[in-house]
Amino acid sequence: QVQLIESGGGLVQAGGSLRLSCAASGRTFSTNAMGWFRQAPGKEREFVARINWSSGNTYYADSVKGRFTISGDHAKNTIYLEMNSLIPEDTAVYYCASRRFAEYEYWGRGTQVTVSS
Image (cartoon, rainbow, N blue to C red):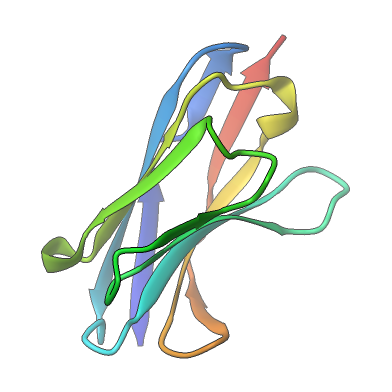
């Protein structure tokens, strides 16, 4: 089992910035990627960003490219999401997830991000 704990959410004005963190613990040795997802009220959960530990490659949803940056410290099993130029449409619960293969197996409980206009 892998436990994921997110932190760093909050309330920010449009145009502002926030930094989310996600710390993984437990059986993390076989994790090959970690990512961020979000779910806004009344909407389905959507992919935000991912980092692959083996290659260091990062991937982003089109809606956040150029504004969000995912990074990580593999030794600490921690990832971050730097969010800049936030807009009200970024308001959502942000979830951290990890996977060994193609499917994300473990999820955090989420952290609320609210962007006011």
